[in-house]
Amino acid sequence: MRPIAVFPIHDPGGVVLSHLVAAGPALKHLFATVVVGLTAETAVSQPEYTAQLRSDRFFQVHTHSRSMPVGDQFRDLYTLASTTCVPDRHLHLCYPDRLAFALGGHYRDTIMADISAIQTSNVPLIFQRSEKAWRSHPANYRRLEGIVTEVGQLLFGQTLDFAWCHLVVTAGQLAAILPKTSRHDMSFVAEIVVHLRNQFTTREVDWLAWEDPFIFDRDPQEMKSEQEANPAEVQKRLSYVLPMLDVLTKAAQLERQK
Image 1 (cartoon, rainbow, N blue to C red):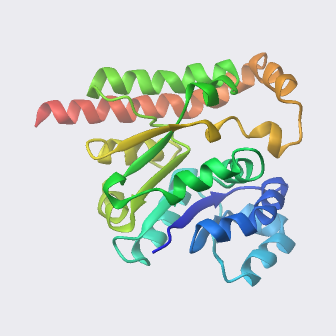
Image 2: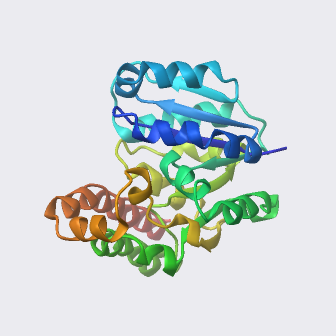
């Protein structure tokens, strides 16, 4: 069985959607279908792209009826995907901008080979950012997410990307752990790793390099320098890094109490 990609889209401006449409042929080569969760704001702001996706049977489009916290959006989408697939189907939990970037440039052959090579014995699997991929990101981005990885290593003795960009699970594995999650914000993604952490295999890949310059058609070094000098970027990262640290510390406390 070919795998299924599952990702949310919050894109009122339509920039990511334009790249997603362009990546359609490559996605159809890799996946049996794509389950898309459109936020209510995106569906209202981008009726043409929404209609275009709905008209293509390859995309299974789920539109949230109202605005809701990001963790709840993810949970609803993942619940839908995991409960409508056979338990051993591979689900790629990922992000459309990351996929569009990797498939739209010189990483295309590499990501296709990596996804095609996945075996059930490797799942659950986290594709983690390699050193080369991390060097492309703004330094503040890397340092703050790196704190979560370091704290996870100190607490659990495992080097895992709790703020992951691309994770592969079976539908059965995902369905089993979703009822154990409770976070309403972006730390929900860290909960998934916490609950499966003793089962994961990992693979570092270059194609998880920083996608924003490609998505927004910007010079990479110029955009990187801007973000490194912008205090708002630090606040943005802290808004999910701090809740993720809370997820990790509480999980470690519960483990010690057993």
